[in-house]
Length: 521
Image (cartoon, rainbow, N blue to C red; front, side):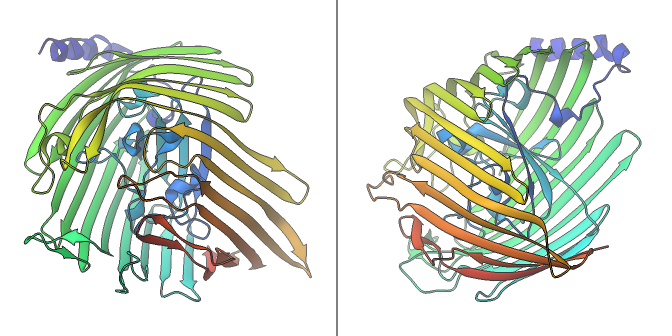
């Protein structure tokens, strides 16, 4: 209660300074010392929005519609926070964000690397992914020439609707049942004065295998029907947002999770910023509330910040930015999610679960970066006890290089990463190599093309001791512009038809050929 009174006191104390606000969007404040990766998620080129900032993430366990999360810097998917249109979107039940049930429908995507718990909350020790919906006057048609799938999207300056339907063959390699994925996504947005409005509604159906039915039998006839909603209204000093995730499985498993979120910058003056946020999270019949206050000072070459939450310790961060050198150091405290602590009919509750605590640092020099994370306490799922337990200390460290080299005819794309992590399913080596030809001219018709290779190697063993296959895929695209408002693209994914299992029992890869047409107006 004392903290709540203190927060209210600060809010009213600084309300007189309401005319002194940063010109940056709330979710785009500068994080001094962080390496920022920017991308654009386009349905003609990408399978997942995650590819814009994790370039080797082309395949999801479970195929199209299957779960895929951001395990950046060798960390757990719950250690990177995801923000959509200014609102935290990590699910209140699981703690992660599932990119697999999103359609690529034209978004700008940024990844702010390094420990960022002061600004983006306690789940941001590995960084924060910022997704902003964009609206373009175009229609995109995409169909598989050797697969039963299609994608259609149409949009204007403040509205878009997209639909996808396709199948994965069988999600599991131990049966031949056809598993389908279908998704419809509607987005609206607009600006009124200094306020920006965004809203999204997603409705999907996903077939999968190996689920436990109410009688505890194992079935391959599994279906997940889901709906996701996201809405926000923002200005330069305030964000009000809402997030909801509903899932209903024919096995009887239900998810009803939502978040109401408010953030206010009550003072922003000469590099000093004071902010408050509050949220209410709900998972099925349980809910909890949390409030936080954060203070940041940002100067030309350095910055520091502190954050205090109602039921957690104070976390801090320091960053340095001197020419090509960027360095950050910060700690994190992540409470167990409602699902981790409460469980359900299949997962046993663990009300005594302690929070995760860790410290992380990252040093970048030009296009190289080195990272190191040390957790004094982690949270893992125990497959034997079938509950979440505290796992003690773990370390993740590595080095990566990411660069785009411009040439006269196009760009070289270079990404290399080595990770030494104690987490499961983390590749030791990751790479994306390729070349993009742009704005070429042949017989009077402009064209572009790209050839890319992605690979993930040495993923180690699954929890049951089975080895995990490497990922290796080469992809080719060639596009032409019959007129300035039309772009036709032929794509061949996995040229060499290299099939593998992304996880034991979950097939991936295989050659896919598609044709896309983009009509702009």
